[in-house]
Image 1 (cartoon, rainbow, N blue to C red):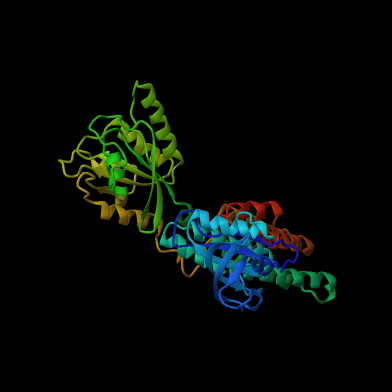
Image 2 (tube, rainbow, N blue to C red):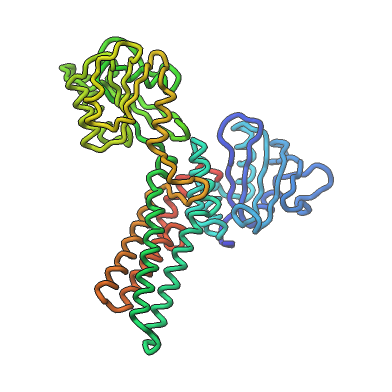
Length: 462
């Protein structure tokens, strides 16, 4: 535990009206501050409160009762921060919670910074940096999958895997150092073969983690999704079906949607950040033209495209233009032949020249027909069963991915050094570089600025 930390306090529950609010303190002086503001009911004194028990009483400020509360005192090290922690359960509401917090600050506590409690948990060794990042991911989780993936990392599954790889690297490095110090006992061929084989195995382990990055990012951040198509094919109707409300204006007049509309939906645990774009067509309308250019740009940047085509009409140049965009940019896409309740005129065989046959489906946005098939296709497109969220370590941010890629590069340098017949000290240097890059993930080797940036993204009170 770091004895140099001041005692800090913050409201840990969301702002607004509610049944209860929780005001949290952490630090060596937490109980001393509590003694100045808390009056237990009965003859009990604050100094007599046992750890991890609940005590009923009142918060008092300047001799006046602020609120009746339940107080939990938790003594270090068995706390979230590994410091003494006090949690005050008061009545919900902005005024009450702020009054309790004000009393604590007036009597010696400092206002906590965003993420300060979790930062202290990290600095005091209760969790590592990857687990700390999982805390904010868990708080922000929007789907069951993202929640499970966050819990997976919070329980230390990624940390354990990283530590296992680092331990192997350390063992190899130690072996090399011994051989350098005692060359008379060394057989270079045996040493090089052992290092070569083990390094290749470690590269495969790192590759497996890197392969989880895209799915991890999708689970955490959502899929950048664009609904594209020419005007009046039913893009806005499809959006309204997906979100189950009339968010977009639907008319028979081409060009109604001139800007982009953004929505967030969850399909089979996959969060989609959907953008409904202006219809792509040639136009002399200046405003609509800007919307069309935006649509093309969004489509190029998207992770996934719902390409909507009016199945009741013959394919036109604008349809082929969007199909070509999907094909040339190798975009994940589902072609939606809308208006299947009408006579179909679109030549589906021409569409197969641009996209995979399995991902061309017929729907009627007007009648909510075919959406269940659409949802199944979305799920199969992103999750093919190769990763088990509950059983495997999954990375979910670019910081971790960059560290893994750098570690992989260092291990590839080891292979190259062995193939070139270079001295063992060069191998040792590359192994230690890989060891350091992996240490960035769990926080054993990371700049203070990076740590501050990570915790600044947390909410107050966590």
